[in-house]
Image (tube, rainbow, N blue to C red; front, side, top):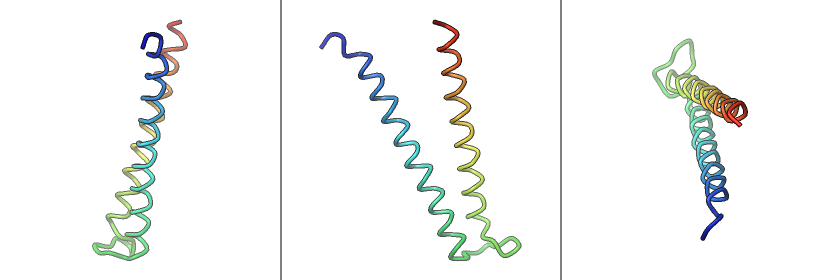
Length: 79
């Protein structure tokens, strides 16, 4: 169908962001469960894998926001 390309691109973008958010939320929740369960190995009484999960999700989340911001700025200035 002609003229539907902008809507398809918008749906692709929105669905990608939703899936990414759900995956990031699942890593955060599973890290919380690991920390609450005190699963070894421990570092100062805190599970290492829980800490790594939180750090990784923070880095990935901030990186994703940076990429989205840069893409939006590039689109804005190339109109």
